[in-house]
Length: 264
Image (cartoon, rainbow, N blue to C red; front, side, top):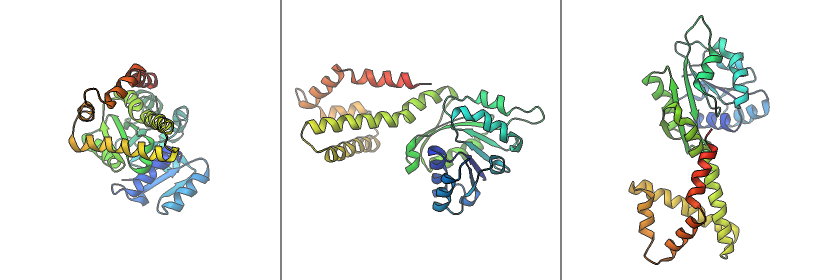
């Protein structure tokens, strides 16, 4: 499979690196385009077999999968530029731009003399850089085989969930924005640790390991978070007092409000 990635920024570059480390796409079959050469040179120095170019049309020519990793306001411009190089019957076009629907992409791709290609919305988070992303994928006019091909590529970069397009905004809030929300909890807990007497670096280590341990418990036991909470709380104990104090300050409500606010 030949893959073209337009955009070598934070997400486009991370996807290219994750693919190059995987087994589903040959590194020599990956082409990345970007308007400036600096990011391309950095990518090429890490993975010499990756093809790089500043010419978007050249990048997508003969590509089976075209990934648009550009800002939302650049999507229409890029599609207009390259659409004549995309051959519809077997091609796949994927957008990673937040808030851009498959309907909008179809309108920009539309040409009366050929069928529209399969279109995907792909929403990873920044942990794709270390192949630990939570990635959501939605598709239109695709086949089961094509869906599996795209999912297999991103499975090598973390967890993947195929969803209806209507859930893409919610997935963005929960997982993409969710990275920032998890970091904000970590920072808050660190600050609490400093108030309790730890040095900041030590507090960060403690909170990071605690968060990691909490996730590993859920993965190992396959339990609901409340089950693990019950295991550590005792009647009249300090944990339940702390939880109640957090809830009194609006912990759960504030998290839900933040997710609602960030749903596009």
